[in-house]
Image (cartoon, rainbow, N blue to C red; front, side):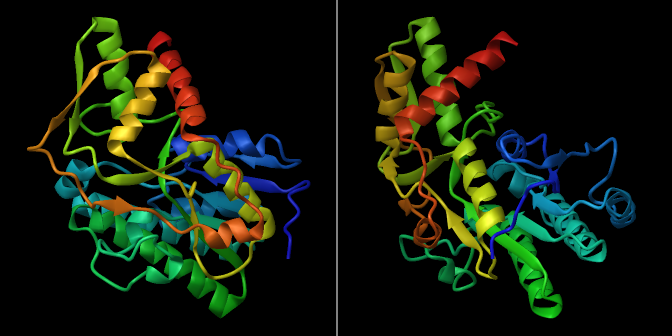
Length: 312
């Protein structure tokens, strides 16, 4: 059931995002032609625009990374944007992919598709077994719909459309805005700025005890290309490192990489979130991919990429 990328035209939808950019870099090592199209070329929310563009380009394969993304505040403030835009983007691309005869499509989900109180580690079977986390349910519902749409096209038309959902990501192209970024890039920036200013301490939200799993975005891209070539089934596969650390341990690792020892202080007025969030990536590992780099190695790479953004 392997899919040969040799000579194929592969469209990476969402190539300007962190994940899409990583997939483009990774596909550069494959004997295929990578196709991209910015918003100035095709409006992914427009069904007609997507249909026309795909009819003209006729890609052999599609990696669907395009999505409207944002943090808790954005999700809470703009529920229509996160639900409607993401529904339209995925539905337009998946429908047009079938219409033009795309051979393989990989849809990128998210770990937020799982119930807020899913049993840990979270297996793929936990999908739709409980209530979602309210702060990002709009985005999660759209992603679930995308997964189900891929399953529906497989069932009705026998097409090779698959899905995968990553754990918490970091790396080149990340968001370092302290108001909207995730914990790892936020701490990278905080420790760097503390080092530059000679500040005695770095503040963390909450207690520092929650457990989280992190995956470098280039490792995700490698796993996605692996799945593109080796996987064909309706089950949406988890993609994670399988390693979890406390937020305090994450901060200590970042401090070591940045090279600055500062006192860690904790703002107890800020929420911890769920105590533990670890995905079970056993199905992916059993297929033969288990190449996630260590957290320290990944953070060092991410820090180097962050320093480049400051210089550029």
